[in-house]
Length: 198
Image (tube, rainbow, N blue to C red; front, top):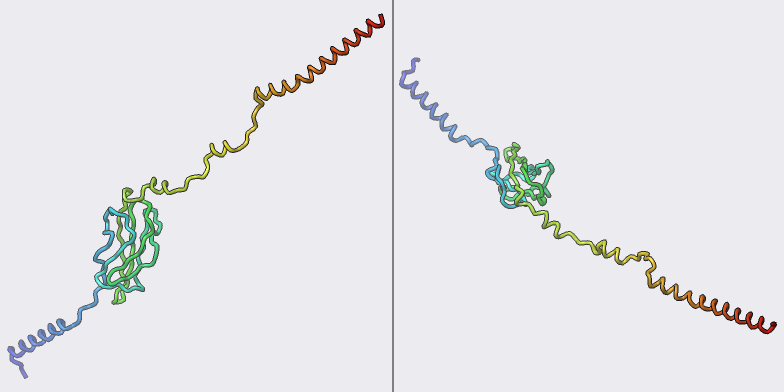
């Protein structure tokens, strides 16, 4: 049986409408989670020393599959704890930063659709925001005794002074005078004995 041409056009139009309605009614595919902002901001130079790095996601990340690692310009990790999830943010604490230069941040996060996203960015820490060396040096303890104090308290051998030599010379004078007196007395006795014998 031959179908009239207008009827065939109506069937095709109805099929097109049904297909379009099916596409409109289909649920949208799950999109991967993405990072919408960071603190410190990517490629920024900080004006205050950061104590943590915070990532804000478009959707709440999964706690078990999210981690952040921060490394200093020498490649050493400067994170001081685990990544903490709170709502749509992930935060990792940092140790006290002491090296100026570019710090690299790398992260991974598991999406609710089962996919894992990864990414990285960097920020710069200028030397001007780091603690000055003089401030840390002023807090160091001072030695309890200086070398001059220690040397002044230690006994040192001293050479005999002129007063000591004079005292020892004066202590020898009585012996000299006593010897002379004995010689004089002996001489007088000898002279007297000779006169008597004469």
